[in-house]
Image (cartoon, rainbow, N blue to C red; front, side, top):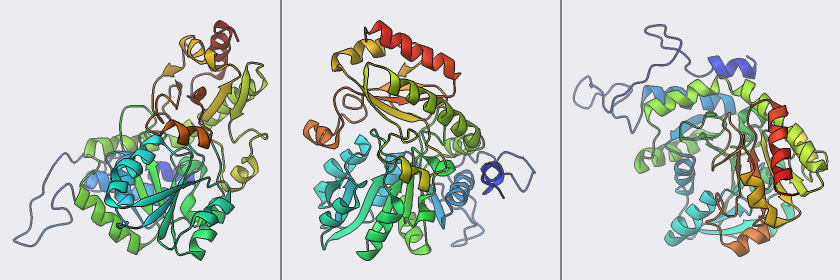
Length: 381
């Protein structure tokens, strides 16, 4: 079955009892049992819900893993994965990751004795140099948020296996439509399903997929024990949205490439970060491990003072956090999504105060280009 068809018919795509072509929303907290100590497949919705299970089966199939798990947010999924480790364990964390991921590890898990080192995962030599006897995992994004750095997943996996480490990949920016980390050897894949998988800025959700039964038991235990599960209605919304993922991702990518090319030629722009550009440092690796480049772009103006007037001049691009919706969004990472990362760490990773991030939507490309050009003109650049 082709991937585009799996998006619609994969996992549990209909109700076997009634024939409904949309999985029902099982809005229930508990289930009648056959007798004392004789539950049916479901007994309590924190432990399992038919609507959530349908989504978990779908993402498992799309990522090519052993088992999928649905959480109340991407950070809830990340929390469950970090909870696999013990006091004194050490994790290598990509230096250019979502601010919420850094905050969770730095301000929550570090208090419990989980240690970490920031590394530029796009440079394999920095990973090898940072490995300690107590290192247990490498956690990375590719493309990264917000600088769109590309990490060679297969190369990282090779290093990880040589040192008996887990490889965890946040696949939010690429989605399984453009990239499948488990097929490249990763152990766990995480998604903020709020983003492209949800695609309509109307639901907050997280997903994780593991490669084997051993990890499935561990993550499943954490999902149930911590309890940050995705509700049935939100599960239904994500599964509904995934049906159109192929169409949306192609539109996002098409528009993003046009925007990136325009920005790259504009005299007011200092640098554009988009892996679909041949000038991007990770372009060749992206071509090797991805089937497309998605819809995220970051760029810097030559004059940082023009950032605010530029954003104020936009009409179609909405100033807002999050990404991956059908509408185009703009944000300043240092002030918004990555503000929880200390400035010295941000700047060392290359996240400057004037960096602008675009989530390119699926509007008509001409309207997006016109909006950006007009805003640049109004800002006097």
